[in-house]
Amino acid sequence: MSSAPPSARRSHPTITLVAVCLAVLVLPASLTGSSVALPQISTELHVQLAPLQWVVNAYNLAFACFMLACGSLADIFGRRRLFAGGTVLFALSTLVSAVTSDILVLDVARTFAGIGAAAVMTSGAAILATTFEGPALGRAFAILGSSAGAGLALGPSSAGLLVNAFGWRSVFVSHLVISVLVLIAVPLIQESRNPAATKVDWAGTVTFTLSLFCLMFGIVKGPEQGWADPVTLALFVAALALMALFVVVESRQEQAMFNLALFRHPRFMAVSLIPVALSFGFVCLLVLLPTYFTSVSGMGTDGAGATMMLLTLPVLVMPLLISRLVKQGLSTRLVLGGSLVLAAVGALWLTVIDAHSSVGSLVGPLLLLGTAMGVTAGLVDGVAITSVEPAQAGAAAGMFNTMRLAGEAIAIAVMGAVLLNSTGNRIADGLSSAAGPAGAEPGALANQVVSGNLTGAADGLTGQGRTDFLGMLTGSYTGGLHTVLWTVTVICAVSAVVVGVMLRERPAADVAPVEDIELPTPVEAGR
Image (cartoon, rainbow, N blue to C red; front, side):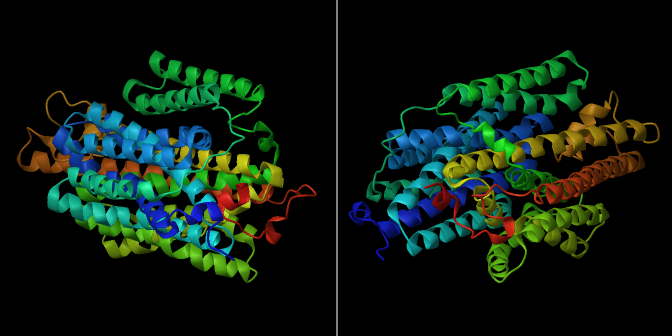
């Protein structure tokens, strides 16, 4: 069988595949790489935790909220055109991120980078689906998946080396260089559209995006202003009201962004819950651990990046192994439910971490948490899509990916708030025995500590008083991180039970049982 349909033979399939995979490679690296750069960003720009978190949160939130809208735009205006536009937007935003010295500008630039990433991801997958067919399509998506895994796995280590050698700005410069290389290949990519596509669900996009923004902003503001503060409460009320409006809007749309009927499929909901729960046990640790390693464990950014590879490398290795085992008869239900159990055990085990922990003592829990994420990568996508009727596969793919990315953004915000709140409470207790700088306030100190500026929080102190105060801050930070890990343990353990029960539901007559699923690629299922 030909590797490309006739319309694509006029293009350059190999160059197209390389360009799309390079573009997708940098998207997860932009998350993991920026996470490693956060401590140095905090130190150089003198920012506290809340605006610092948005360097990651803004990217993830925009990525999640614009996935479906960008998919529609690609169908209407052309996949290559949107791929090029998304790459340009990502590149320009990354350039601004690399040169700015204003945290607000950096956060806004990261928002636009997330929008560009959504355009690149959706249009890139569609380009491959129209450039290849048959076995070649499967191989193309296998390479695409490996590229995304490589970006996730190698992002921390490469960013650590760059930050250590050239500073945090070099992380964004490296992403800019890759984006420019992708743009050089764009003229050689074949254009394609979907003639049946007519409009974008802007009402759904706006209400969904604003609802998530208000929710995340409220979570970030809670530890700073108090959970009962009128502004915090207003943000949560607005998030709830906007989500209710989103449901009403979607129920009246002929071409809805979300097919709300899919929520009536217990198995689809169960499979969609898995990456959301794993976001708490994996993605949030990608953001929180590098700062702890550099400020408390005494690692350099390169050492922190190398240590984070213990968490990320299984995501690159495990999907291929699990795919083979499933084809040989390993229970898919066992893999999916077991992943959450592994995450719970890994998070519980990681509570051994403290200021004196060696890298060797962290190998086991970090590998276990990475394995929990790795065994579901790729597998969970196919199961989600084949958990519904074939006619709903495309809608299921879009909803699944949106829920996954939104879950990641919310997990980072929630766990950041838990860490800040718990650390602040411990510092408040510790100030009774370890005197801090004049006018020291627990919330402000917690912000400095969790942002990576541990020594800066003790400015003005000398001698034994400084040593005792730093010891108290270190203990408070470690205790806050333990609270995060215990919270992750509970979330993953409860989710394992819920998912196990929901996966036992009997499927509809035209839906394959979980154990009988032949796993397709996400786009292949939705074509």
